[in-house]
Image (tube, rainbow, N blue to C red):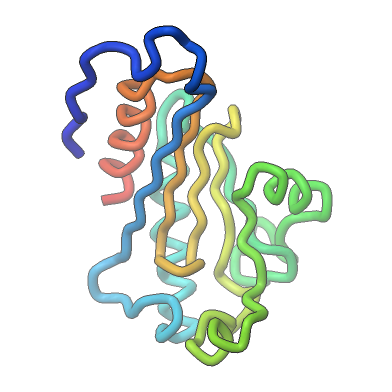
Length: 162
C-alpha cells in the first residue's frame, strides 16, 4: 500500500481534527465470501487470518478474540467473555450477530457464531474483524492528526496478511 503524500498537518491550527481513522477490507483468493461460504471455508479464513495477524510487529501486536459462543478456535473454546465483548463494543470493533431480515436472508448469519472474531492490538488502535461482511476488515485509528503514521500501520498490517 503506497503511502499518500502528506504535506504537513491536516489541521495546522489543531482546532478541528481530534483523531484519524482508516479502513481496509480484504478477501482471500480461493475462498467464497462470508455470506456464501461453508463452515469449513469460514474456519480456514479464521485459521489463515489469525496465523498472519499473530505475526504483526510492535504496536500492531495483539490478541485474537473469537465471538462469544464460537467453538472453532481451539485455544479459546466458547469465545470471548462478556467483559471483552463490552470493551470491543465500546471501541466499535465487535462483530454483532446479524438480525435484520436482509442480512440473515443474504447468508451473513450462517453458522453463527462460529469462526468469527476480532483481532485487537494491545494499544486498541488497530482491530481486524474476521468473517464479518468480508474475510477481513481492518480498522486503524489514532488520536491526533498523524496520517503518515496511521497509513504506515495499515500498510504494515496489509503486508502481513497479504
